[in-house]
Structures are given as C-alpha cells and as structure tokens.
Length: 237
Image (cartoon, rainbow, N blue to C red):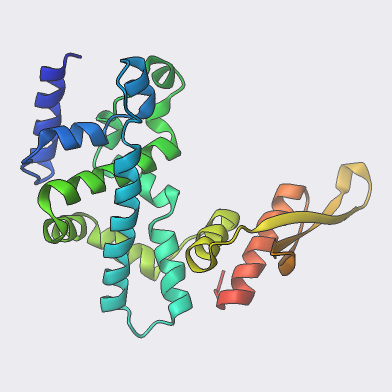
C-alpha cells in the first residue's frame, strides 16, 4: 500500500479512537515493525524507540492510577497488580481491542508467519502507540484517553486477577521490584516412565522461593511459581 493510502487509513483509525493527530508520522512510526522497516530499506529500527518510551509512560500512568484508587493496598500488592496490567498478555489483548492488529506494518515474512496474531508484536506495538500519543498529545491527553477506553477493563482485571501463566506473572513482579531473574531447576523425578512425578524449585540468586510438583517439568515449574506468589505476596490463587 502506498504511503498516501497508509496515512489516510491510519488517520481514519485514529479519529475513530478519538485522537485527532497533530503529527501523523509519529503514529506511522509506532505502527512500523522493524521487519517492515528493514524490508523497505529504511535506516531505522522501526517502532522500538517508541516502544521503549511507551513502556515507561504506560507504567507511570498505571502506577498513578493504582496509587490514587487503591492507596490502601500494600506496596507488594500494588506492584503485583501493575505487573499484571502491563503484562504482555494484557497489552496484546488491549491492542486487539482497538484493532492495532489491523494497522501494524509487517514484512512479508512476518505476515506469512501470522505476525498480526503474535502476542509479542501486538504488545510491543501497543507500547509504541502509547509512546506516540504521549509525544503528539501530551501526558494529560494520554491519561484521559487511556482510562476512558480501558478503565472498565482495568477495574475488572484489578478486582478479579485471573492468572494462567504463573511463571510470567512472577517474573514481571520480581523484575519490577528487584530487577532480578527467576530461575528454575529440577530437583528430582520419581515413578515409572508412564507416570513420573517431577519436583522443581523457583530461585532468585540461588535462594529457593517456591517449590512445585507436576506430571512434567513444565507443570512443576508453573506450580513452583504459583507457590512462590502465595508465599511472597500472600496471593490467593
């Protein structure tokens, strides 16, 4: 699609979202995946810089929202909720909700590998889009726009945090609080080949923070992460 049509399509989408752009190019940049930039020989890393900015801005406005609305929560619980709200899974969902999957510019190879449905691409592009709004319209507009569109979803997520990937959730909390990586190791496995039981532990700096048992290594690691969340944050799971 030629650039003129791309701009027209993009502006129409932005207007439908309640955004009257001052600088359309910054939004075009936010939708440009690095694979597309490379394919058209642009000396650019696509939307990666905007993604970097948007990640920080998004964390800032969500932190402010949680502080103002749930200031009676403990610091640990606030960090836990923030990690859930800025998780890759959540951001990919929000991206789909506003149809970023229909706007992102991908290379032919990414298109063929169903890049428009990849959680990582959707989440990263959503962050880049947030960065673009911040640059173009400012923090006050962004804050109002974001919560006007997603307030109901965020409140529901905050009141009923449903977690399916405990390892990812635990890592996002630990990363936010301690800038550390959670590592997993298999302690042992027992039983016959057709009915083995696996025992894994979750560790930070070689200190065990959770133990788990499962029918396979992956299941036991998820259980270890779940138990670490219960132990460290008194989370009911």
